[in-house]
Length: 208
Image (cartoon, rainbow, N blue to C red; front, side, top):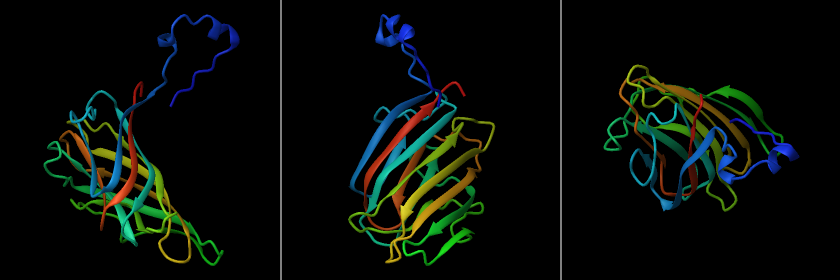
């Protein structure tokens, strides 16, 4: 994300608000979940852009709150405009954790949360709590999804509170690739069980 710095002279010289550069990151779409089973970003649907317009796309997760306790936040990709979310993926997943009572800390790889050439939905957070104050925040980058030459890489980082009484902070690092040379034109998010509330914002990064 590029930053533009102005001084007093440069601001006074501006004759139109349109003359001020907007930076490299552009908000494309905000979807709001309200007891929703899924949120889906489909290129060409409801003003969603997920094509060659941008080489990098970013999803921002804001106050993702599940209805079901001890559930996982998941995503998958589609190469057929959302008819199927079943792209084959190989992924990694590790986390750092710290319990509220200082009883446990760890930095560990999560072998049960990665995928090896699987079409399953990928977990972005596991064991998420549904208490009134429990939620998830984070972001996911998707690189060059419109390519018909290369596989589709993604990286994600999420932060959430563990579901049980430990009130642990979980900092999750997830990455991998969709093993397809078809263009990815839709992405879907959901819980492994039940509905959820919250917002997901989609941005495009240009000049990259």
